Image (cartoon, rainbow, N blue to C red; front, side):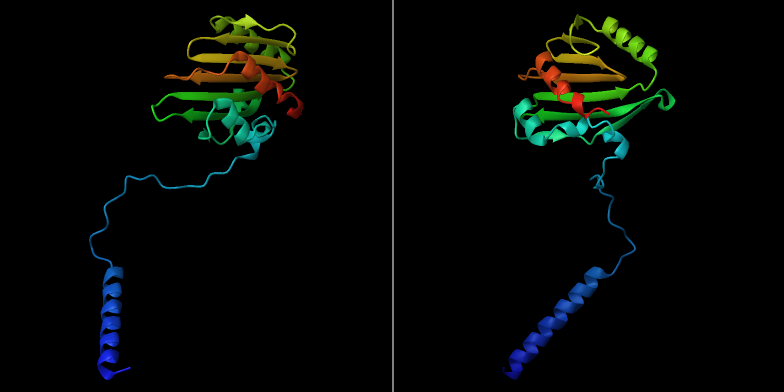
Length: 193
């Protein structure tokens, strides 16, 4: 290598090092705050899957049910009500189309433990407060469903559990039918402790 070429390479290297050093120096001015949210990796708390209801479904099943490969699940959430007397889990999935239309499903399971009277009272309260509630005789201990243009719901009382499946549809997408919601809940029966 010629002496001129060696000097040119050294000069370029020195310029690069000084440029990099200049970039790493901190000024008194700080960078403006970002409006982007901080990325965090959340994990599912064990209490949110204790009953096994939310782990009963695969992403592929929900994609097929909601009619899209782009289905956003949420992490299962634990349910803790009445000072811990009622525990359980909930999970949901949503499809959102480019035009903003959505179809979603939410599954909840509540364990009332030995308090059968509280479970019976809550079930009866929900049924009487649900407009258009229709009893579903022969499904577990008790069940009802209801539908409207944008929502559908199925409630099932099974042993010490209150199982709920709801669906909402907006835009050109209809909610899931009560029959589809009933099938979803039916797949969870064997998972319950």
